[in-house]
Amino acid sequence: MLMIDCPWCGARAELEFRHCGEAHLLRPADPATLSDAQWADYLAFRDNARGWARERWRHVHGCGRFFNALRHTQTDRFAATYKPGQAWPEPPA
Amino acid sequence: MVEIREMPPFACTLLQASAAVAATLGPAVPAPLTATEEMLWLGPEEWLLLGEPGVPQGPASLVDVSDRYRGLALHGPGAATLLNEGCPLDLADAAFPPGSCTRTVFGKAEVILWRPSAAEWRLLVARSFSPYLLALLHEAQADLTPG
Ligand SMILES: [Zn+2]
Image (cartoon, rainbow over all chains, first blue to last red; front, side):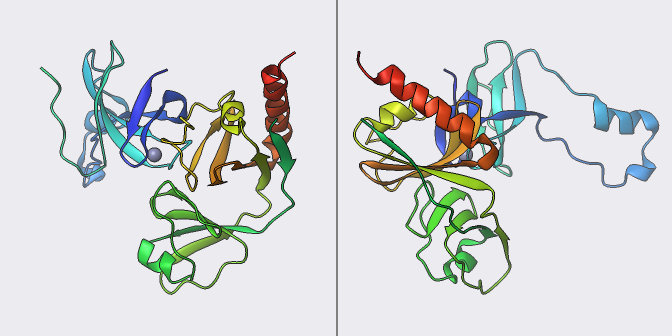
C-alpha cells in the first residue's frame, strides 16, 4: 500500500487522501485586465509534468487539511510533503 | 471474541476554533491525534465535543451534529485485528496507544476511531453507513473465528 506523509498526521494509507491538482497556482490580482487567453491559461491549462510535479493533496479522510506534495508522476514516488506556505522542496537529484 | 455494541444516541458538537478559544470551553483540549472523555481531536483547530458544549470566549464555530453519527463500541482482545480487516491504520500499541484518536476509513466508510483504553475502541460513522459498517464488522468477525 502506498503511504503518504500528512504534515499533521504522519504516514497514512493512500486511500485516506485525495489528489487536488497542481499546486502553487496564484489567482491573478486583477482578472479584468487579462486577455481571454491569459484567463483561460489560469483557469484551465496545467503543466501536467511527466516527472516531478508539485501537487495539492487533501487528507480528506483524516485531518481534512490541504497540503502540498512533490510527487513523481511516472513512479508515484513522493519525495516530500509540506504545509501550505512552507518553502518548496527541490526534486531529488 | 470481540464484543460489538451499538452505543445509545448521544449529543455531539463540531468545534472549529483556535486552541486558545477551544480551551475556554472548560475541558482540557486534547493534543493532536488524541482524545479525552469530552473531546476528540479531528484536525488542526477542529474537535468533536461529546455531551453538551459550554460557551466559547472568542471566535468559534459550533455545529450540533448529534444526528450525524451512530456510535459503535468494540471491546476485548483482538479488537485491533478485527478493525484491521477494514481499516488500513497501524493499530499496534506502539502506533495507536490508548488515548489515540483520528478520522480514517473502514471499507468504503469514513469513520472517527478512538481508543479510550487498551481494550476499548470506539467508532463513529455517518448513520446511513452504520448498517454497512456493522455488516462488515460481523463478517470480519466470522472470518476471524476459527472453525
Ligand atoms: Zn492529516
